[in-house]
Amino acid sequence: MKTIAIDFETANEQRGSACSVGLAWIEDNRVVRVEERLIRPRDMRFSSFNIAIHGIRPEMVEDAGEFPEVMDEFAEDFAGATMIAHNAAFDFSVWRASLDGYRQAYPSLSYMCSVKMAQKVWPQLISHKLNVLAQHLGLSFSHHNAAEDAAVCAQAAIAIGRSLGASDVADIPGLIGMTAGRLYADGYQACTMRRPGTGAVRAKGTRTSVG
Image (tube, rainbow, N blue to C red; front, side):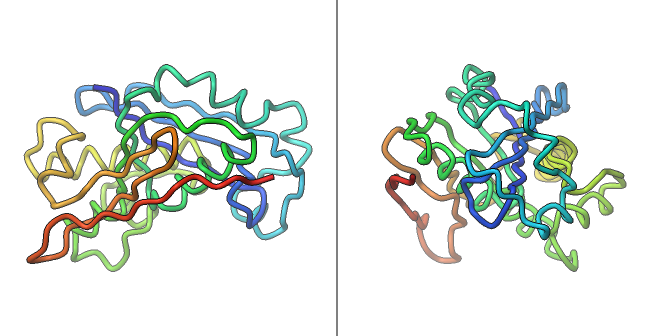
């Protein structure tokens, strides 16, 4: 089973402005591979706010591939994979908006949100931001570097799985009442947590056309 943590950085406030992606592969409850790719947005508008967060400037991505080219490199890895993102609602909206902008089909995969996982398993923490989880786990990293964020997200998921006695990170949703999100050709299903005393809550959406 393929499990991959993912993190996007964006050039501006638009979700379809991905300028960097980080990926961290998990095998046998270990991070075995970490990759980062810069992405050249179709609209090369970089906001000063976003630059201050991640440090990526327009001149740094001038020779980078655009979103389809960059993501196609990992298409075989994504197919049927379980993905993890910290605040998955953001990262997967970036993925969807970017694909919509190029009128490309969504990949078929499921995904989990490590924020929701951490909130359930470590409710005592004052915050569940990635830097707080890194400190909790004794990890040092450069926050808002896509590769390092993905790696810490993966490490957090591994630690959560161990605390639950899960044999595999992909087993976490069933242990905490989470319904994994999904991407599929014509839409998506959000990652949700079961409310106490109810069945699984599902939020569904269909793809939209952008650009």
